[in-house]
Length: 139
Picture 1 (spheres, rainbow, N blue to C red):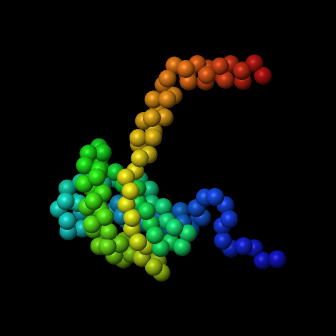
Picture 2: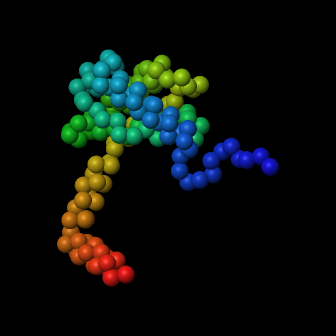
Picture 3: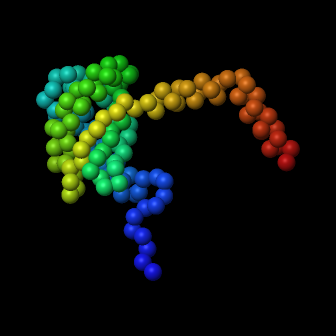
């Protein structure tokens, strides 16, 4: 019986992850070198945290954050305004059948990490963690 070539699991396929990482590297390189001719965009130092691709690899969503988080909305607008030029430049550096449409979102990972640290620092949570450790030591 032939195996199903398409992924049926909940997460992205290896191909999606690999292409997303290639796009992330290429996009980071373009933004670092300020290859786009837009002074509003070049004024920001932008970090590309992650790129997620659709299953057909035709849409790539880049999660970005300006250095220090200052001017995030302004940087996002500049990226969206230059999405077509960035798409063309990214496609030139990659060997893909289709140039993926680039979409940009603010990367909220850092905010979630800060909130997680704050939760773990709470004394009630520390007490619960210590209680779990004591229970494990007794077993």
